[in-house]
Amino acid sequence: MQSTRLQQHLDRYLGIPLCVLLHLFSKPAPTTPIPKKILFIQLSALGDTILAIPTVRAIRHAFPNAEIAMLASPTNLNYLSECPYIDRRIPFHKPGGRLISLLRREGFDWAIDLEHWPRLSALLAYATGAPMRIGFSTTGQYRHFLFTETVSHIQGQHEVRNFLNLAAQLNCSVQELGLEVWWCQKERAWVREVLAEEGISLEKPIVVLHPEAGRRGEPRRRWSQGRYVALANALVARYDAQIVLTGAPDEVVVSEEIAERTKDRAVVFAGRTDVNQLAALFADATLVVSGNCGPMHLAAATGTPVIGLHGPTNFAQWGPWSRNASVVHARVPCSPCLNLGFEYGCQELPDGTSPCMHTVAVAAVLRECERLLGDSC
Image (cartoon, rainbow, N blue to C red; front, top):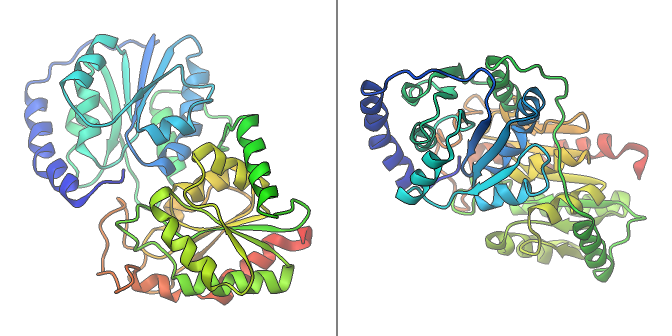
């Protein structure tokens, strides 16, 4: 879950006492072995939502007649707008009495919390009144008090497998491990129309660079702009690649600055796509290069070859989940330093990046580009 430092402090110093206090007054209720209504909770992180899809799919298949709802941010719900495993979508903006009242009225049998550290999501699961509440027990987070069933969140294990442990706890068999995207034809048509307007041909290699890696206010996962420029120049020289830069509306400046420095023209798509349009763009690309963020996982879900760049983040836990993916990671003793996603072990540099990201060499990334591009170019 992404959040500001203030939100993290409030979640910790108010959330932990609330979890313990509510646990003291909790009374066990009879659970329903075959639920009629199931709620998933994934408040903000797009990447975690994408990685949880094999688990959501397994539970959907195990209980085909249940009504399944998802409480999530608008961005997550946009990604899930055509997901066949979700019946209802409940937007999360901020906690409050109206939301809690709505959740209690729904009469959920099961509440499944997909977050792994925030107390807020555990509190919302508790607020539903669902007799069966399952979520992660994460070391040092004290959120497990509010669940009737817990699963240990294992540091260094890929998040897809951590999520699947929730399904296993519910005795749901898992037959498919792949990620999914569900763009509509209108999204693909829009992408191809804009590519044509920008002079980008589907007959030549298209390399998408996603330079941001998480929210703009915390850029320590980001590779330096100069290295993206050097990579773009090398790919154009070797493969006559067409370079496209992507990002959220508040990430346009970074992409524009990189585009201004490349020797050949790079097209800036940053700020122009929603999440499903971005997925359609990734699907038309020959290769995607990105730091560890939601769009990296989105690219992996399309099946397009993707290279994930990791410094503070644990690539074994958050690497792109795809057979067509590769990872280039920092090789310094203090990397990785993140298990929960926010506990950085060092101060950022003047440009906002982490020192370990500067050990990820352009030559190493270029070697992986060459391996994945192979004969396709």
